[in-house]
Image (cartoon, rainbow, N blue to C red):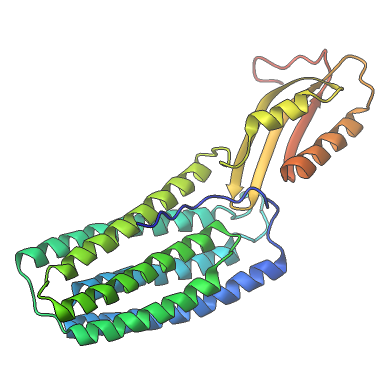
Length: 308
């Protein structure tokens, strides 16, 4: 069983460059075309051959196609600039699309398992030759799509890559099962393989949903050491203490930090110089360029009630 994890790359937290965005959009377009073509082939092949494994893979392919289309749309929408109502822009459309992809995969898992159980109870005859031909075409197509989508910086594009990778494994499994069914009378292999495909989908979907929810719940990215960042700020000679310290992800590639920094009495730097030092530290040492830092003097008193 392959364990496909999805996580935000906090080593590169700045927004993707225009060239990177264009490249990802172009690769997504090609992948959509390839995946949609194989979807049609697997539906036809599954119906003609009677293979549930092929039809299960076609269902996975359908979700893949949807995932790729959503990724393409989200990649366009999420990069639009903010407005007075949506001050961060629509960056989280990308995360919502990834969440929708994951939830849809969970539904597909349920359908595949149900159909597989029915096949165990009432086996059907399968055209193994047709099954092998279509699965072989699926392998080639999925390899092309995986190459197109590899090394993507966007969480949503990487989620689409996971869809394709899982489908590639499914197609390989179908070929292996088909070869075995040619030489041995093992009709149970087809529904058994369908359940195995569902398990692969389940693991990918679980990690994808968990990561998307982590972003929506504004959890600090897994690769960001929050205590280390806070300690680095507190160790600066002009800092007395830090409070209201928050680190979260706006979207993939967009890590934000907000905090209040209290200066020591009679600091050696001006508030502006302190702010520049802090901004530089965040970007240089931790790769966080989206910062909101409030500088306070040592005798500053916060309002305990709503300020007027």
